[in-house]
Length: 119
Image (cartoon, rainbow, N blue to C red):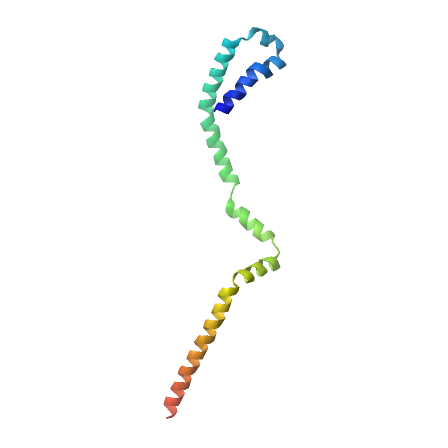
């Protein structure tokens, strides 16, 4: 609000007088002070409604899921695949090792079962 008050002050003292010189001759400090107080009271009443309306529209326009999905869809599939493979390299290597270990253990168990069944 202090920034708005400065702007109104500048408007009443400089811009209004510049654009309407005749008004500037009749407007004194007391009138400027009264007008500024009136404008500030109106702004204090109007500002919350404006911000609420603005935030509502911003939330409607700023759908992050839609933005991210759009940007991901615009990426070339090769780039996404490369990034995915680089990111999951350790996990894929661990899954391969676990698969090999489980296969080895299952093979040993099958070998023991066959050996016990034959004997």
